[in-house]
Length: 135
Image (tube, rainbow, N blue to C red; front, top):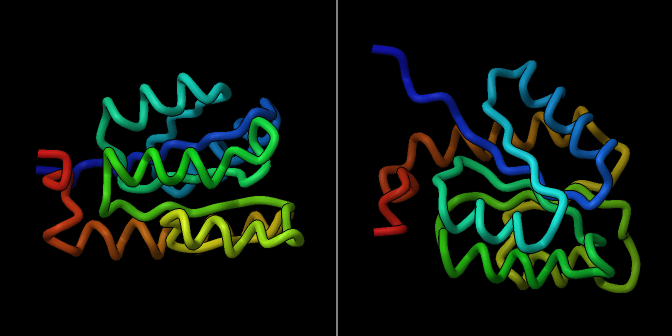
């Protein structure tokens, strides 16, 4: 029996960002779901199981941290990785306080893919991060 494919939800209001992230993560063997609206992101995040979430701090005028908090209510254990160009104004601090696991600055796509792989692998090997947190 093959192990379950790791699923990632990538959230960005920019279509090109979604496409680039999806392609980079799919090459590493991830099943990638993208969301480009806040409503879609919340519905998908709280309605399905994911190994990892990739969010942008700047989505919808800076709503990334609030989205992270909402995802944490649905899925308190899965890793949440921010991939954003927002370096100033405390964006990384806000993301981490909202429950993010890690914050990678754009345009470090290689760093993002490596961090995603590390976080998803750690979560997969942790018994408490197997989707049971939703039950």
